[in-house]
Image (cartoon, rainbow, N blue to C red; front, side):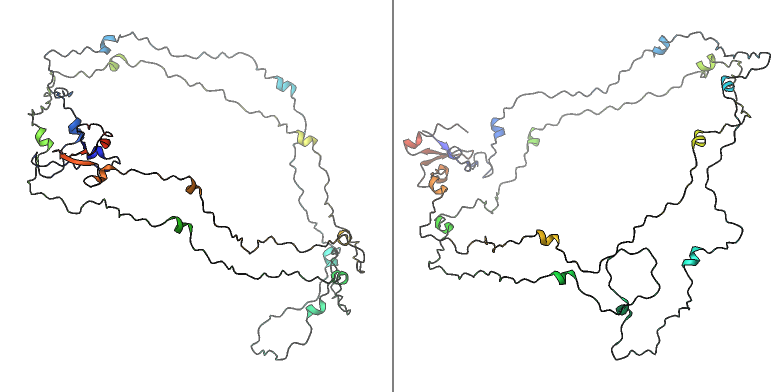
Length: 460
């Protein structure tokens, strides 16, 4: 007969056997000690791994120490020769006078010329005699008689008048509006310019502007709101499609808050205590160095350098220095291309460039036709049409078409529940058979049609 446990019947992966032993091992209702490691792991016999640590025993030898080194064996002493010192050749001084005539002295003969003077601006020298002419400053700027300006101080006894000011100010009487002509480059007259003529306030805008009648502004009539006679259908798509369903409350997966308690004695046996065996360990042998024994006899402090390199009687080498150069007493030739080709030109002050003052603005007003009036053409245009949407909503008497792609193409599929959910219930197709010591609960199918769907279970 086909027998299956809960782990094999479950198709959703959420149902498993409790894995609890029932008094066979003798530990009460504790967690199952059977694990995948213990069931599948195959122990193999193996010896203790040998240590790669070197042995502490020292290898002592009684033979004499061989002081033959590679340096003593390969080094060959060569004979040394005396170093020859360098002796400079003796200077042979010829008899007679030295001919100092060179190609430079022969071709470049001294020329008679004065020393170039520095180009400097001549200092302004003042005449010693007094100036007797009439300068421009005195002729143009005459000294006026002026009295000393008295200090303006606030008088503590000043009482402002109660009557309003009835006179005319200097700004009102002296200010005259003139045309925007170019200012003449002459000094203004010291006399005050006054005029008794009335102020001329005629402008081009006042004389040429013509006031035309304006058309009345077009005003659009406001449309009256017409309420709808159809009642509001408050049934939404959510209320129509999502209806309440009758379903049981989801079972909580939270474990029971009651803690597991047992009256059995605590088993403190561990893998370390059962498998570990104490081994005998030998004491570590420490290394003791040999005692120092000084050699008999005196130490020979004579080195190879002191024995082979002895001082030699040699003269000190003289320093090699260049021959000193002496200066000449000839006159320096200071003529250059700049001083020979450069000519000093007379310089004068450039006259100021000033505009002529011959323009006089006309006093007669402008009576011609301007370019704006001659080229401008006035066109008639109506009021612009408004593109604002109409406030009346679109209404239709046809029924609302609520057919969506989800409703037309969705096909409801039946999901078969997990057969482990209905175990030990009337709806289950399996009947309880037995429980193993490891905690697996086995069931067998009740009918033959349902039995053919499952194969013979693999022993766990």
